[in-house]
Image (tube, rainbow, N blue to C red; front, side, top):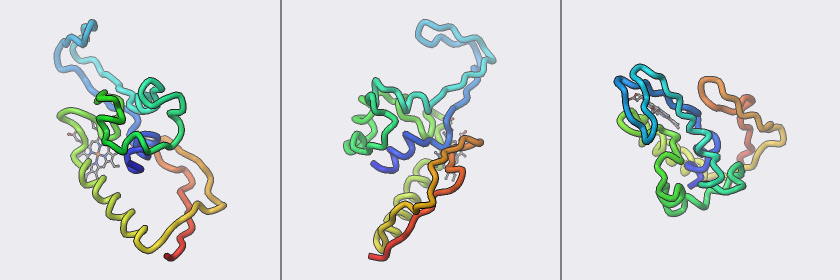
Length: 140
Ligand code: HEM
């Protein structure tokens, strides 16, 4: 839940790129060949019709019953790892590593944000905290 919600609000990759190999029909649109399409996945992640008027807030609960429920079966509403044949090949590795790292930390420590932390998301190739995320660990 919290991993998905973090990836919804701060997807490291904020847009996907595709290029048409031939003319294709997309609903009512005819898209010519060799056209580059930019898919702004971060915009879908903040869509109030899916995520509510407070879409900018960190609220992991909608993911409690899985991504399909959270997105109301709209596959394109949550695309941190892309979609289709070119979906991120590291998707499972990245998710599993994050779960392992978090559970190793949380078995022995709790943590709070350091007073020196400054909220500073920055998009430069990927989205990252410009000044890092300083936390204070407390032994359990
Ligand atoms: C939180 C971590 C990660 C995020 C958010 C992420 C996100 C993405 C996204 C959005 C794409 C483009 C998918 C598309 O165009 O539909 C992608 C592609 C890719 N990712 Fe990741 N990724 C992550 C971790 C990893 C890791 C750990 C690896 C390798 C061990 C990896 C390897 C790749 C590769 C090779 C591609 C290109 C796949 C292709 O074009 O067929 N990624 N990733």
